Length: 94
Image 1 (cartoon, rainbow, N blue to C red):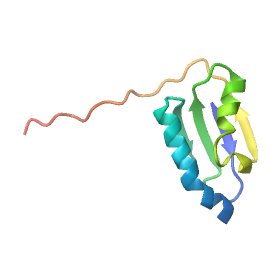
Image 2: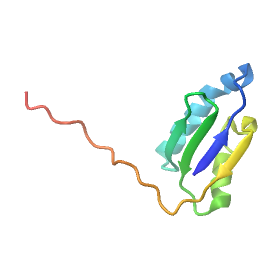
Image 3: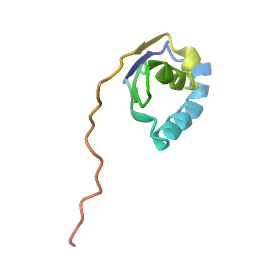
Image 4: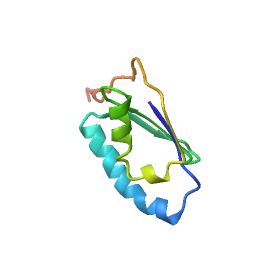
């Protein structure tokens, strides 16, 4: 689990966001990323990555397009990560 800190938004950071979102979506599709959250203030990102060890997780995180802008990077190795299983929409009998 990573806790990533960003500085105040600049035009340079904002310009990288579409590429960053595309990369995040790619990691989800590859099942390398389990969760991704951004604070309302846009100052913090929390994400859970799938990796064999902390070094591999750091290598994955270093590929984020916003990585050069992170002012603090904290990795918290997890024993497990539970999320609510996604389900299909309820079936309507109408």
